[in-house]
Length: 464
Image (cartoon, rainbow, N blue to C red; front, side, top):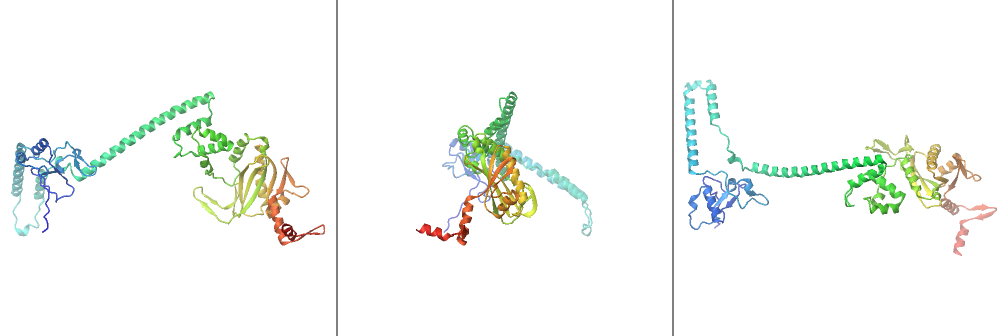
């Protein structure tokens, strides 16, 4: 036979809460301490249990509606604090019970009198005329009496409802969040005041000529960074400053990294700049600052120019509101799709260094004049910063061949051209020339002074 399940009842006098009636109400045992148990029994109106022999504290329980929220903890489950005392919804002493009973009787008498008054004002009509009778006066009197009988629910009865307990928890969380935000606001104010005072001090130093604008900016960058190297978010302007510093002297950059909070070299290598197909003065200024720390022999260089075939394709850049993939030479854009990309790179002659400086997108390889104007402007910029261009090197493509012969008028007798009173030689790339000779010998024989030149003789030479 199945065991019958028993349910817990609240032992507070007048409370009818049962465990089976609601899952939101918790039940707490009487205290083990005899003094606190007696105090509880007096408060809840159960003096009959004070002298009960063999009273077990777990046999009688008090529901959670008789305790204030401050006397309960809601960490994992609802439990009482050690000093909790039931204070809510207690009927009280005998005098309070008598007062409540008298109030109830007075309310009942008032209700009876009001009903009699209502009946005295009602005219008795035949049954067939009741439907057409006006009930305005009766309804008005009834509303008045009902309004007089209405009462507000006491705070003691509604203080521990689930909705109010939930709102109380939300209020506590909001208070913690408010204190945290207030602390952050105070810290921001302190930092702002400190930055203002430091900026004023820096401005005073600038007036005396003791500090430069770049150094003051560097101090601001250092203050904004964290103490640790990881997790820093460097300002784009600070990255450019660090890149120029590293470009000028990598050894000096590594030495300063031990004193200042500078980006690592791997961070600088991943730095990407949006370089448009235009002649950018920033590149030439950086090169000029680099050569200040190099000998004069490092300024002797050649211009390497090469091309790459592109697939004709257009792309709309939403961020910059422009179409990418059109013919673009130094900012001169046409409505034709680009098919070739040209790149100019500098290469040192005495000192080993190289640096790309410009690129262009052309729709056709036959636009020699536009290509010539672009290269002339690049060479003018190089001469202005003190770079000594000695030659131009390209492969033997048909476009470069025509550019050298038709535009620059380079011949075997005169393998150079004059630009700004400087003699600049035009040289075809030697590795490309060797490759072209090999390819021609594989398919053709040549005769020089009546003698035959063939790839067959080269093979025999290496075999024997």
